[in-house]
Structures are given as C-alpha cells and as structure tokens.
Image (cartoon, rainbow, N blue to C red; front, side, top):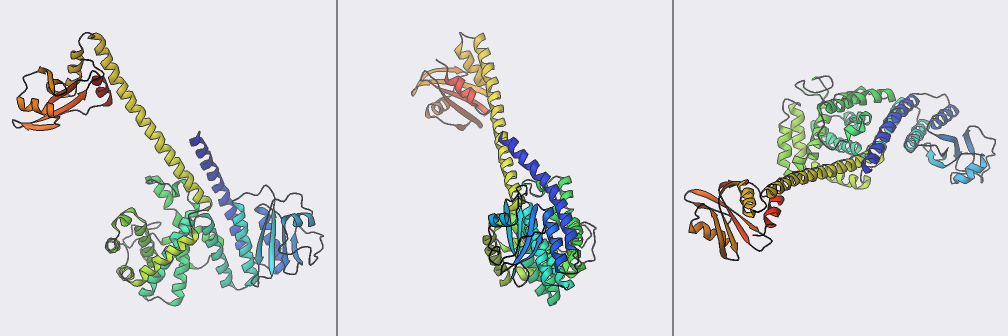
Amino acid sequence: MKEKNILRLIDSLSKFKEELLSNLGYLSELFSVTFKDKTELYETLAKGLLEYGAVFVCIVDVKGNVVFSYPKSDARSSLSVIDHKATLLKIKSLFNLQSADYMLKESFGCRKDLFCMVVFSKKVKSHELPLANLLIKHFSSLLCFNGESNKQQSIISAALKLLYNLDQDTYMHSYRVKLYAFEIAKIFGLSEKSLGKIKTASMLHDFGKLFIPVDILKKPGKLTKMEFEIVKRHSMRGYEYLKLFGVEDEGILEIVKHHHEKLDGSGYPEGKTDLSDLCWIVQSADILDAIQSSRSYKNSLGIKFLMDEIEGLRKKLPDDVIDATLKFINSDRFYLCRKRIKNKKGIIGQSTGYLGNHEMINQLKEENMGLKREIDLYKKIIQKETKIIESFKDTFKKNSNKIEFILFNTLESLGKLKGVVILEGSNVVSIHKSPIPIDILKCCIDGCSNIFFNDKEIFFEHFLTMSGHDICAIFEDSKASITPSVDALIGSLTL
C-alpha cells in the first residue's frame, strides 16, 4: 500500500513538471515584452498573475492610495482603508471578492514606496506561487530601469530565482562553481568585465537541468545509457530556454551550451574544440566541484587526490587552464572558498521545493524496494530450507526404525565423511565408520574445528541432540556449510 502511494506521488509530480514547462514558456513571453508607460506595465503584470491563479491584483503606495487595480474596481482609495498592511479579509471585503484564499504582498519599484498585493482563489496551485513571486520581482525591476543592460540583468535575476526556488541542489552546485571559476579566472589574468561575466555564466551553466525529467535527474543509483543521453541534453536545453527568456549575451550562452565540450572533441553537445577561455575555466571549475562531490574524494580526504584528478585532464582541457586550477587548489583562496560554501550551505539548509520533495520520495521508494528485496530473499531461504526438511522427512519415513541411518545419510550429504563419534559428556558412547586414530578421537572430545593429519586437512563439525548426546562428524578434505535445517534435524534425533 505504501509503495502504491509513493508511485502516485511520483506520477503527480511528473504531471506537475509538464505543467511547469508550459508555465515557463508563458513566463518567457512576458520577459520579452516592452512597455510604453507604467499603466501598460501594470496591466501586463496583472494579466500574467491571473494566468497563475490570481483573482485580483492591486498596487498601492505607502499612504494607502490605490495606484492600480485589476480587474478595475470602484472602491475608493481611502488613505486609512487600504494600505500595504491590510489583511486578506479587509481586501476581500473592500473589493467584494467572492473567492479569496491567499494573499501575496511584495514591495514594488526601486524606492520601495509601492506594494503589489495579489489575491489568489482556493484553486491556486502551490507551484504557481513562486512563479507569481518571480513575475512580480521581474516587473518591479522593469519599473526601476529602462536601459537594455538593466533589462538583461532583470532577466538573469529572474532565471536565478527560478533555479533557487525549484532545485537548490543545482543552485548550490552552481554557487560553488561560481566561486571556483572566479578565482581561477583571476589567476588566469582575465579583465574585470570578463570576471563579472564568468560569475553570471557559472550560476546559469546548469540551468537546463530544470528541464530534465526529475526521476532521472534525481535517480539515486547509476544511470542507464539512455538516461545519461537524456541528462546530456541539459546543456542545449539551458541554452535554448535562456535565449527564449531574452538572455542575449553570447559569451554567457556559449558557456551554458558548451560547458561539457572537450579539447579532443569527445565532449557534447557538438564536439566543439574552439572555445573561449571563459568557457574552459567554467568547465574546469565544474569538474573541480564534481570531483569533490564524488565518493572517492570524500574517502581519500586529501588534496593530492584532487590535484592528481585535475592533472589527468591534460589533453581534455587547455594546459594553461589546468595550471591555473592547480595553482588555485594550492592557494589559501581555495580554503576560503570552501569556508564560504560551508556558511552558504548552512543558510540555505536542506534541499526544498519541488525537486527536493521528489528526491525525498525517490529515497522512500528506494528504501521500500530494498525492504521488498530483503523479504523476497528471506522467502527464498525459507523455501529452500523447507525443501531440505521435507526431503529428510521422506527419508525418515522410509527408515523409521533406523535413526542412525538418517544421521549418517544427512552427514554424508555434507561432504566426504570419514567417521562419526557419539559422546555423552566426555565419554565416547560409540564410534561409526572406519577406524579413527587416537589423535583425531582426542580432537573430537576437545571440540577441535580442523587439523592437519598425515598431510591431509581434517574438518570437524559438532552437534548437540535433544537426548543430550554430542555428535562429532569427521570430514576429510572439505565439508559443506551447515544449514539451519540440517542443524535442527540432527539436534532433534534421540539416540
């Protein structure tokens, strides 16, 4: 029953992913829109929010004046009736909203003198709230800035916010790559402009992972060949979606698209070898973080292993990039970066959001499957032991008057039986099979496990019966493992 519930959750999350991609497509269209005036900007924002489940949007100033409302309302903008601290109940009453379950408030504009208040109906979906929040922040930036460069900055900020809200694991990986790439680029001697670009590109280099099926991206085990081919699409998907969102910087787009290429042409997606220094540096930082995240590095607990791995990338990455990376690893800056990463991880905490939940469900599913495999294994063992016991029962029925026959027949099935000694305490009751030398007999009494006798290895197996007798079975050369059913059968004999 538990497994079925987990499968239902995974199925619902997969459907949500498809809906999310559709929503992102709509979001990208809004990012590319230009506006004649503030009223047009407000209207476009409101229409966009209505697509994400909002039923009412209004913008108010700090004095309580309603600057804009959508759909338009006749409510008077009294300075004390509605301000940015108004409750959902007051907004619902003032604007005569029939269906209202949740209200989102965000400061709006660069001077923080405006507030955007969005009311959602009960039908709003949880994943639509961060997208609505993202949209408000984007239009807030557009209200402050009119220049093209600032518009680009707003688009990039929105993309980073999306990455943070949906996959904090990838966001943290990108943050680490940014720190490493920046330090390597400084050693490499790049300009201030290039340093700024490399920070942005590093944060966005894995943006395409948002568009990879979650059950593959967060799979706990090894990927199949087909699954790995799907994961490899993330570089192209990131490039395509960032262009769709309106990112125009070719240097950033090149890094997103080609950060898995190799100098020998063995990389993907195009096998390209002629790339910018920025692209090679981001790739080196990406690999550096991947090595540190690997199990082998965690087990080695040493910088030498890390440096050997980077050194092994010669002919895959340019030598000057590898040299700069090795110099960075050997510097104090490397340890300072790792300290910053640790602090950042403490602030963010464990992975949350949609992909974090999916990862948790995936883990539960894996644990559930592991328990199922363990139960199946025990069932097989029980079935095997039952068959052995049944076969002994059949033999016993055929020879009901010959208990010793059952004993010897069972022991001979275990290996080359040399003899059997039955003891009561330290006294020998009877000896069966071939004559047994005194040294071997002494070992039976002393409870030995194995000895060498006349250049041959002798093995001993000891049993205790219900009648209180000790049985010492002597095997030559080798013996099979004693199963619980054999031990139980011999132990039940009354001699």
